[in-house]
Length: 574
Image (cartoon, rainbow, N blue to C red; front, top):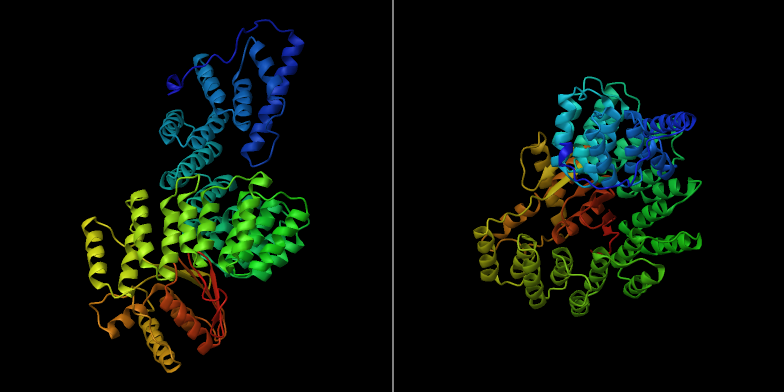
């Protein structure tokens, strides 16, 4: 393994004689540095550049280098981001007939994670097993982190599962790895197992698990965690407080998020950005603008994410002039727009109906347009029923991202809405020939501290009969209130009654119906969906909120919809 690491001539001449006193002082310093490295493995922060240059120079002159001295300099290089130098030194250490120990291996594994080089990481893993280090908790945690960073969560879990003794570091590492890779349910499951194993959560635990609560809108669990955080005195930790702000905002509790933000003793760019984005996604554009301006007044320089937050706010509220002014001011503040900022402006123009202007903006971009930015304009064409431009945009999108079925679906729906059934059928036939399948629409709801998932048309839920009955009852009540299903985009070879049946079994309606039968009257219902809410469901949920007198909060893949008394916070602008 180590012979495969390329050599580089890091050191010129090497001196062979040192004054004994100097050697002892250096060795003591290196041992102390090794202690610092050990502390780093336990999650403590150290200065990355602590005397690295001077220690390296003294290290070059040492006549006898032991494992501790090698580990100190290798670890220092890794902490300072000098990954190639660290690999060079690992090879030199091997050539000096010194075997890497647990500290060496724990230091070097982050290098392979950084380079997403799972092949070399696996070679290190093999070395670990062969030399009996696989039961070491520090090495195991480094392996878990390496595999997770390389998006190999299954391998991370395998390493974790084989550990005979699991400490808080290994638990926190596997939980963070799951959450960072989008396996939020698994992260929550492991967190509960950690508590059952009587392992006490620490600050980094909450920083790892709160994003899972935010994504799945598990407000009940989030509140429990918040109570624990306050009891442990972690609520003034800036990272945890920002995570709490994010969690409450993404669960639709923007006022609670603001309360936590206001209680923070110090605000950094992360906390300002999180609260600004929270207001933006919850439909409070003007408040988001005020927060952004307050951040600037506090002399905190907005970063790229902060600008994305304010552009999102302007886009969702149709504030074209304000959004454009923020976009043009980015370069003056030393922030270069990336593809997400260009997409936000394209979305801003598209939502406002300025489709031709949006098309020109995309084609004139200094960055090559992605399939995602074309999809933004295509969605706007659908909203404003501009089929001609939609065909042009869909062609651009299929050229940029040929494997994406999104343009086919959107254009097919537009053909159906325009009564062009033959074109819609032809497009769907082409999709089938190419082996394309529509991703399933999924929705989630938390009831009594458990997350329930629903797929459109799915009948497998244990309470499906009660859900189906509730939907039937709701449908009749909606019709009496004047609700008429929007079936123009449904398949043309299905009769109107069947179209209505297909619509009311959409995943978000299944989740809402389950929430209705499972919670007391008047309880707010919170649902998360992986795709955009369709026009008909949006209309139906407005009626449901009025009929039942409940607030219903739906978070789709672009924003929050707060339905109350027959209205939606988005103002039908999404």
